[in-house]
Image (cartoon, rainbow, N blue to C red; front, side, top):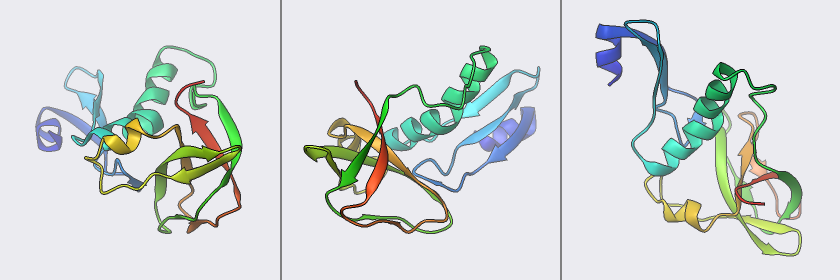
Length: 145
């Protein structure tokens, strides 16, 4: 798809420093309409929508503060360590494991949709962070109220 957009439209961005969702692309069709190319793996697609496409669609729709997540967020404590690699933003699915605690959902890749099905929400780990230790508070964006 990126090659087709290069030939028949305009590809503005291809590839993000985000895991999962790195193959996300943004561009314009030949007639100027915006186009979003989402990754094929289901968790990558969800992440790309949450971080890029959803906010852009809200902005195109004229909604105020389109970059704010539409999810309720709460501060909870990590029950176990959350690891990340410096240089990319990580979209980490988490689940509640106790009163006020969450833990990262074990994943084996972006094609593992069950990691999202059992998750209660997600934590965004900044690109300049290696994660957080057990006992640290994190901002959790909840999938459901």
